[in-house]
Image (cartoon, rainbow, N blue to C red):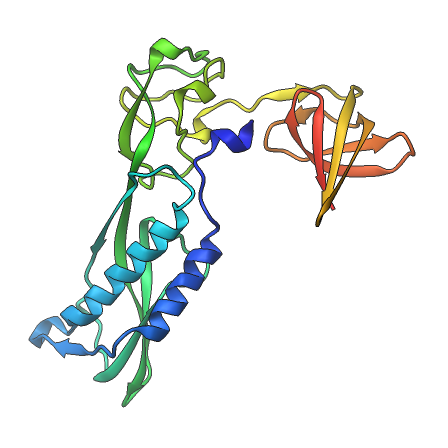
Length: 252
């Protein structure tokens, strides 16, 4: 249920891999001097940065429905930077940074009188169909279909996975106030409690190419998004993820 509600997105590692492949295949680029403003990227390098960001963001949304649009705006380097001339510059995604929203791309000189490594700001917008609120709603509101609509929004404009289909959140409770027209995100919803401590739960243990089902007793409450410990009938303690009413999934 929780997985279905989240807007599908591939891990950032995949995006970084795509960037690496493109960087290796990119044409040489150089900086052009711009008088007192320091060095600025030439058009070829700016196009490389935009293409890499667009390709990686598109790959990260490939599991979504058709109609996703990606828009990339490349910013400017700090004009106070004084960089040595360079004949070949490689764009790359710095580790740990997202590939959408307000982020940065790295630029490193690999052929020049002096090696250097800087970053340039970029804004990656990802437009897709998502659930929005028709009117402003307060925290604690239980959502019904009359309050929800679907519209094209920038799902990368804020943290949290956008909800793609209004039907997925009917009956859910808002955990915070949301403005009219704002896209509804998983982080806006109050976490559900699927079971209480001491209840008997159905446990599904999964591994590479196999799964085993059994029953156990919940040691703690099953809160959506939080791992819970379960004691099996054999007395073994397992940590898993609550997925539905009195259901836990354990990955081994």
